[in-house]
Length: 273
Image (cartoon, rainbow, N blue to C red; front, side, top):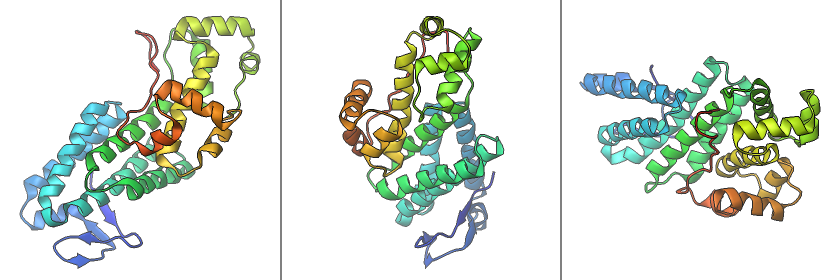
């Protein structure tokens, strides 16, 4: 897969001299400099990176990304930070196109996703946290993909309910209304859900909201009060208490502390989303 660097407002790519480019085929430049082996390795690593991401293999994906960054650092050591920064922006676009190709994203969702990645890179990346921002992108990519995978528990209704919650996580989700939607009693739905997931339906709804909110905090500049309202928490104070219960941090602290890992719920052993 070939990756292209496109001109953006105010963006310059350093390639030995300060020139603004409208389009640059990186592999061609490397080949012209006699580094065909490096070029082949670079794009092989990128392909392997994408494979790991789509398989939700986060550690392996992070490892491949660091190998790619190492090549870029060695390719233009005097301008290595700029080259890596623009590559991360490019990688977000490559990932977006793959998500569209797999029919995971509509055009509108693809635009929102790509914009969120670029904003996060532009706002947070500096010379001292390149690895952390790369890890953050991998986390975000895998999170988006995980949300599109259909649950595979041993009870069909529970699977359908999980999928329904995943697709409507920003809405106000009420157990009685969910039970009515699936034409089962509230008590029956609550019982089978707990049996097959190890948590109550009410708690799972809260967990999924907290999981999604983490990415709003890290990848957007939406005010915390607005996020709480969007996800139907009764007030910001209550939202803060619930968020801290699961993540160990307040929403504000989580937004600022990029070194902290995301909270992710894991179903009991033998089941998976």
